[in-house]
Length: 368
Image (tube, rainbow, N blue to C red; front, side):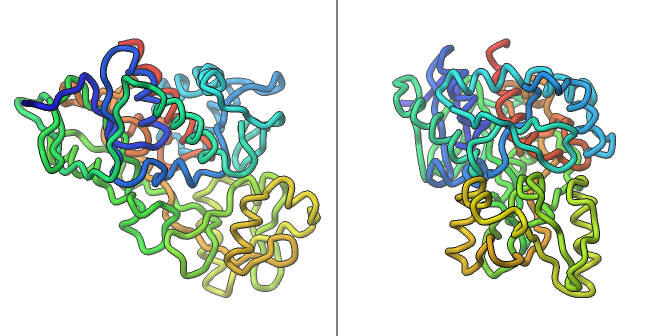
């Protein structure tokens, strides 16, 4: 007997979880995770979700910040959708049970404090709330530690996925995340090996902008894999970037690509460090408790020393070409999150727009 669902979602990051919670209202859902449900980039996301919430902020500013960061390679209409539907996305998360910190944070290349956050590990906390909702939902079946090998496609129409067996579905959603593990130095989890892009390509999907790989400028320079990310929010709260001579060499709130290139240039002459000691031990431990703890476990003290940093592969701005509803050129096949390319990020993603994208566009499934 065929195993069939009305909706099959491949990937358990924020885009996949949002898709599941939207689609369960319209039929049965199978959520497939390559590893454990929490083994994804969302779980590692520290900063938060950028959205125009404060009265002093405005849509035009967020749109312009996104375009400038993306070198104006962005699809403008898609950027407008992302930004203007951002407040509703935040409200939806709050309705699911997410409790954000009272005051939004500031991150590099943002003109205002608009990053909705939960301490300094926002992705993990959002994920916990949505996973709880999913596990309580009888219309959503979860399948962990299951590798999807390929899509079932015939005559440009997708009708299921292939694992160790064929599983059939009316609507297939790819939310498999990025491909950072093709690089030696990356902040991406071990599962980020580009499976979704590869199987979509084999199925006949159009791929775009794969040359635009964002390197986060401030990963901890050590021998771990993936490298531990030192959030943009550290610089938003005043952290300095220091070269081996103890000099600041770049505006700490410049876009990621500009800072990453500046750091690489400085590394030709010596080490580069992040330094937030001047903010004081009390502030650092209160604002960045998780980053402080993680660094202590690795032998570094954020309150007492400069932290060695290096750029690392962080985010794929390109991917499977989709429209503003996640539709690919293959019938019944959708893609959301990092595996997809809506064109919203252009050549370089603005900080904290990725989690926003992972909520805004899957929510639009309810309009189809």
